[in-house]
Image (cartoon, rainbow, N blue to C red; front, side, top):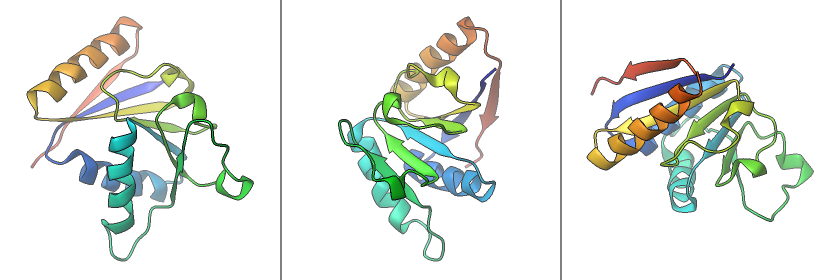
Length: 143
């Protein structure tokens, strides 16, 4: 069954996502990041510059475009729709809703800031996962 974890009180969602992706990559995970195109564009820019000595290899899979065979082994995929994602271990969800198809991943990670609207959307995602019987881990992020 898919493991679901929420990381609460994150001060900067993009910076936290970069660090989380670097950590997962060091452990050898294959990761899909799902979010709206503007969110993914911000994350793409941040991944190129957040660490001056370490790069997180990633690719943006755009709707209707097939990735070149040499890019399909890239460990981090940024997608707006999970139908674009190949097989990966971890889903980092940056959408406001729980994405359809999340259950095909071994692990789902949700990042939640202290913004009231973000917290309200996170409560709905939490209820969605809980109502389907998924056990949820809660992580409080210290500032």
